[in-house]
Amino acid sequence: MRGSVQNALRWLTRAMRPLALRSAGKEGSSTSVVRHVGRRSGRTYETPVIAVQHDDSFLIALPYGKRTDWLKNVLHTGSATIVTNGHTYEVDRPEVIPMTEATAYFRPREQRMHRQFRVDSALQLHQRPTSLRSVRNDGSDHRL
Image (cartoon, rainbow, N blue to C red):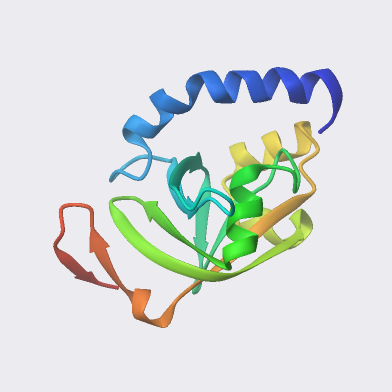
């Protein structure tokens, strides 16, 4: 995705982020949260994303390509936290992969959007072995 369409979508995304974070990661929400640490600031940030779980990994479409700060932060540190459907997972080994390898794991509606906006890459993150026991956002343990 390039040019004015991408700029307009970025503006809309920035404007809607606070609203998206209200429900992202909660049980029943289709939106997840990536918690990551700034590579310069050291601050923790939260970014709403659509993450799909596949085997021991998560896949996140990259509609803005590799230029987003949150992606640069995750690639720099090599790890992040994903909060999805009321559970928190520690992930590592981030790898940008072609969307052709990831698209089958997204819902049909999301696949159509990826094609429409010409999304050509996705981020794959692997659950850390200790993350196979997730923690509910209310603090209780949950075995997967």
